[in-house]
Structure formats: structure tokens, C-alpha cells
Image (cartoon, rainbow, N blue to C red; front, side):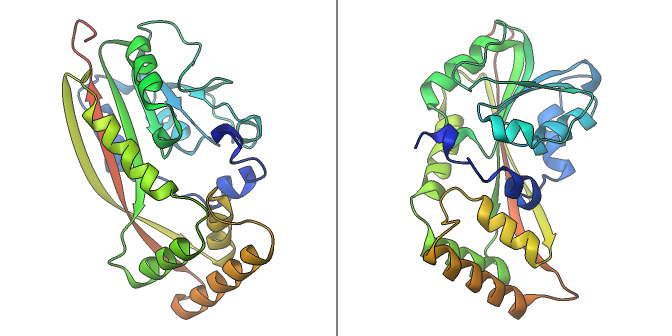
Length: 249
């Protein structure tokens, strides 16, 4: 299965179960770029548009680039978000046309070298790129226990791939200036929300006996930790930005 097909059949759970990103993380993307309303952003691997809408709500015009049709179709419309059937490696966007390129929870799925070349190609001189990730903060008991379930049932090493992707983005020699910011994030969910988050993960089983076991374990974990019908997943939102120079390099 190709990376673009991994989320086939998971789009509705992705839209319902994935966490958003805190305001301070979005601040880090725009700081120094001028008036947000003048920013043209390309959101690569945009999924169902969670991140694209956050950028647009700041006033930016956003080109949401997503290769998976089901994900695009599950997106909630926004007047400043334009959807494009493209990939991070071949966006179809014009050279030196974009002020801000983002990849939220997605860079690890890209061919790193090809995607970075494409990002530099489409960025305007002085433009910025960013890789943004929500990662579990397992100092919290519920979040740690959920992480144990993920590790027990994961079908591949996607979590290691995420770390490797972030490191590759940060180490890219094309960045004139690099920055890293970490922000606390929380996701408060009922049991259906936690199950949707679980089902949205491409490296966890969604159907079959293993999925049934996992979902039963998630329900039991929820019952153990819930207060007023909700649990809180704690996360660190990691933002790594790379700016190209005024000459584009």
C-alpha cells in the first residue's frame, strides 16, 4: 500500500478524532512574515484540512495540497482554503510563489529529499517552511497508558518514522534560519472521540480480531480515567521552521 492510500477508509475518523493545534504553535509559523492576510500558504499533506483551516482563520489564503481524494472530500469547506490534488513532491504550484509552506503531521510520509527540493522551489525569497507534529506527552498517566496500547498494537514503525522525518527536516542544509518551538497541547474527548482517534491511525488495526481487542482495551482505559465522561490526552506540539534566504537560498 502506498503512503497516499494508507488512510483509505479512515477519512471520517481522521476528521472526528485528530487533535487540533494550539494558538502559540500557529503564532510561531507567522511571526516575522508580516500581515497574515498577505500570506499565501501551501499546506502539504493537508488531510481533512484541520491545519489548513487554522492557517486560514489567521487570514492567510491557503492552498491545501492532498493526494488522497477521500481526505479532500471529508474536509470542511473554508472560504480561504483552496484544495489541490497534488503531492509534496509534485505540488503543481508555481516556482517562487508561496510565502509559507507547512506540513502538519505529514512530513514523515514524504520522500524527504524530493519534498524539500519542491518546497524550496515553490518558496518565495525570504519564505518559510515548517514541519509541525503533535506528539504524546506521556508524563500524563492516561496518555502514557494510551501510548502503551499504541506500541502493543502498532503494525509498523510509523512513530519512529515521524521522529526521523522531523530530524531530516531540521537538518536540511537549505535553511538560512532554523527555529524549534514546543507548546503544550490537550485534546479532551469522549469515548467515541478516543476510538475515532485510534481508528484514524494508519499503523493501528481498524478491523479484525486485533482491532476488536484494541478497541475493547481503549474502552476499558477510558472507563478507568474518565471524569465527567471525558479524558484528556496531553501532547507536545513541536514546530520546526526553516527560512530560506532573501535570495531564495
